[in-house]
Image 1 (tube, helix red, strand yellow):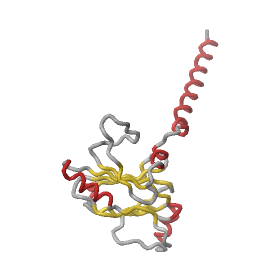
Image 2 (cartoon, one colour):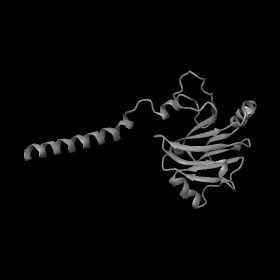
Image 3 (cartoon, helix red, strand yellow):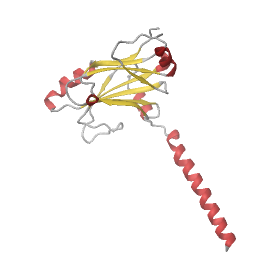
Image 4 (cartoon, one colour):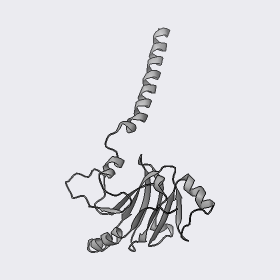
Length: 183
């Protein structure tokens, strides 16, 4: 009986270890990641305003139809990335994601930024250059350091009324985003 219980305990422990390993490695095996879905949108070094999902249609990115979305993909190995512009006086947020979909940085206009969006994203080497004053940046630039080079920046804008949606969409499309190749 004692031997049976030891085998049972050993089997349960081995099964638990295998289960944990599979669960932890499953995301790496996924074929349709958000990074691959966004690769289909030509948003490299420019902000693209996404179309709102229609009721009853597929929504593979899980977008909220009440919000406006602007997406920009950047690769910091090509240089520091910048996003700048002025957004309407309504709630907006900025989130910077790495290739795995992990948030590197996030902010909203409620953080005291107001309507102006002026962000520079740097990798560790570029941050060192910045500290040694080898890179010139404008005063007031919000500096974000990323451990990953491949990123996407997502701006969410919440129109307070359906009537202002076209104007807000236009304002969102005027946001500049991309990698600076200047040395």
